[in-house]
Length: 174
Image (cartoon, rainbow, N blue to C red; front, side, top):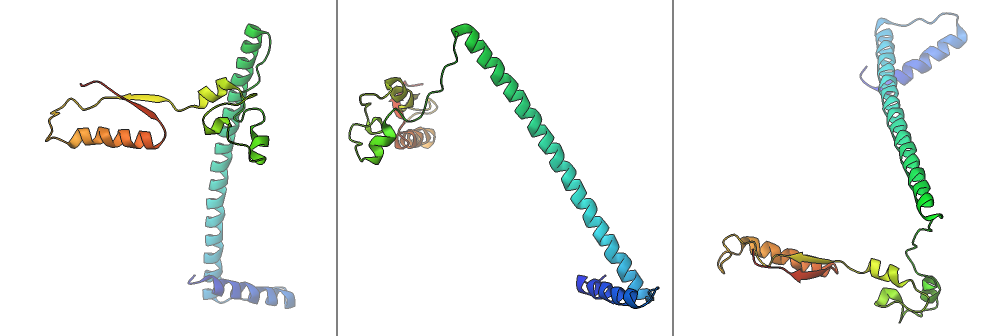
């Protein structure tokens, strides 16, 4: 069929004839157009059913993975309880009182600005501090002043790491 509007017009015509008569008379071209529209509709239905099956399969895989991770978490919790006798609370990202100080605009001594204050968990502060990275000073391959290729890569990497707040320790010559 050339377009969907013709198919819709044909369906409207058939409905009108069916209201008035027991039988519907179609010309050969109209019947062929109707068959083609039905075949297209069936093809689209098959495509959608295939997509539904794929989604259901993916969903069942996701559910299986969730069950596996839940079982692993339960096992880890039970091991922790057996070893320590209690379940430790997870470490929070913001120390006690931090949000209240932030809302009151009292951030001068807040751990976010460089040091923990009274009541803050210092262990959390040091866990969240930037890591240090040791990089070589040069590539060790034709490391002369005129060969900048690899050494420039190392210096660019060093600059990017420092810009991201990571402490870079100058390494040894290779």
